[in-house]
Amino acid sequence: MTKVNFLLRKAPYGSVNDVEGFRLCTAFAAMEIDTNAIFIDDGVFVALSGQDPKAIGLPPVSAAYERLTDMNVKVFLLEESLKERGISREDLIGEDFSLIGKTELARLISESDFTLSF
Amino acid sequence: MTTLYLITKSPFIHNDPSEAIKVATLQGEMDDGIGVVLLQDAVLGAKKGQFSEKGDSFEQLLRKASEKGVKIYALEPDLKARAIKSEDLVEGIVATGYFGLVDLVMEEYERIVSWT
Image 1 (cartoon, each protein chain N blue to C red):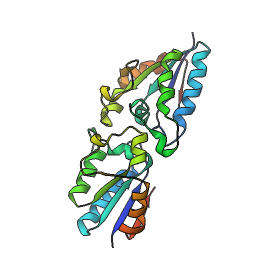
Image 2 (tube, chains in turn orange, red; image 1 turned 90 degrees about the vertical axis):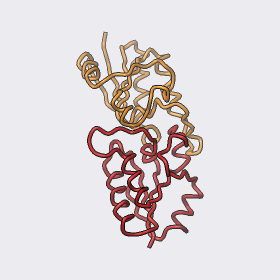
Image 3 (tube, helix red, strand yellow; image 1 turned 135 degrees about the vertical axis):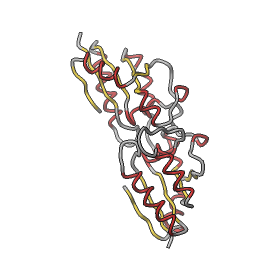
Image 4 (cartoon, rainbow over the protein chains, first blue to last red; image 1 turned 30 degrees about the horizontal axis):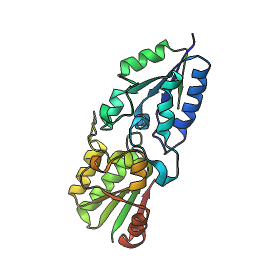
């Protein structure tokens, strides 16, 4: 079975990278491809609970994030990125994610057929 | 003359927000009436509890700036969008709305440095 990783590296709202990444990510998952969404660097802010973007006139990026696991996408968050940004496990949406280190990130990439970065 | 710095980028993936804070801090040592506004992705740096493996975290730079009398503001709609709660803000940061921002730019400060 084909294995694909999505690296989501950008903060929500500042750019459309995450939203575009999600679109492709769910498309792959719908084709029954083994899909991982890996949130690193500012991408981890996508998983922060309590987002309220009404005042800046945008829909919540977190809504698409919450749908990933329903689409059988496995969600990973890089622990180093969370620590650097002062984000703890309790600050995050839901529980359907795995916290990983850089070594595991490297292993996920090495086991994948291809890895796309957003 | 009073000076207000505007910062818009994430301090975790860009270097310029840190550079802007350092310059504002140096100016704070010389002059009174120095302010910094965090806008857009820059508000991500307003959350306390940051950790840096090498050098000061952005949080530490903000604290050092405050010690020199630099006032730090963050745009509230951008904070709310990104789930940065008021109780999680680095001590001393003042959340301001769009009208407050207009006041800061048009009335309270004489010189604007847009570090975007």
